Image 1 (tube, rainbow, N blue to C red):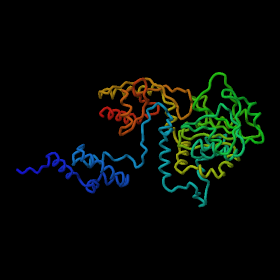
Image 2 (image 1 turned 120 degrees about the horizontal axis):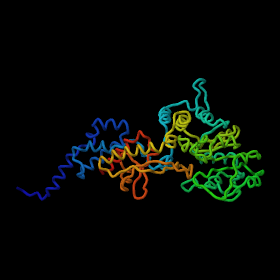
Image 3 (image 1 turned 90 degrees about the vertical axis):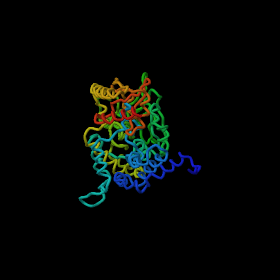
Image 4 (image 1 turned 180 degrees about the horizontal axis):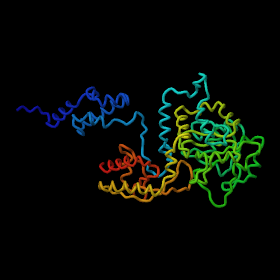
Length: 443
């Protein structure tokens, strides 16, 4: 036998590489043909190349390339991934805050194609953008004579400041000069509009007289801001919107969390209906918090002021798209939202769910137990309000395994354990949650 000088391992490796199927052959598999229609050619070819590389590295055999490619396909074209929110924070900002209701999701799909967003189908002429959503918003807040919607809560306040107080003063309490998240501070936001801030009172006490002394010819409006992400207790005093009304200037109440009417579980959270009835001229709020809808900024109040804001040139830059309008209207007129369901969940029922899940997972040999937990509202709303809940308690290592699984699950770490709080997890997702835990246990 003649020795060619080529190591046997190298010859075998070369043979394996020759057996790896070509890209065009792999793409003829019906599952990948369907994936190209669903995802487009780019993501599918990327999955095929990754599977071929796995074969070259010896991770999968050459005949397993097609199966590997199918397993590597992304669930969607976009980079965002659906996750199970088991953090115990109902409105988790990093997870997109409110989950849309099934009605809102259907409305978004319906609005994805051509719609009558700015067309009156009866007359064939241009119509007001989002008219049915705005009507639904006013129906939910009877004290509002008119409404307008922009792309988020901060934008609602910016539009009010620009349209009503550019070059003028905004009178605001020092105790309400808040930071709204990610380093954005309310004073900076307001000053960027060309308005000047007239600070009154102190951090813990601001009286009606403090506001009255500051109001003058240069006042654009008085601003009341709900400090939704912190609380000051003890020797405090704050003037209410109703006490400030009737002084010759508009009173704008930024309630933040988007509560439209009083909620029995959140007695200290201001709502739009109460603020307007008390005398506020305008109310601004977010749509993706306690309302349980899409990200948007709500503006409600006196008709002439809302019209001034909606006709300002900046309103065009801040307007929402048809998908947001569709989701908002369905949220306002449709069935209970996931946010409302999570807030009203029965703690005893949550514990029974946790017990059933823990028992089934323990039967699979997983170190898990059902425990009592405490959830929160989140989203900068209802600070200090605790929501009794129940959770699955797992070893700490599960936190990373669950986040990086096929169905990402985001929990929280507490006392060296990974807790999966059920307060914001719909009961319909229990089996998905259990399967995600089982998959994590196998990794």
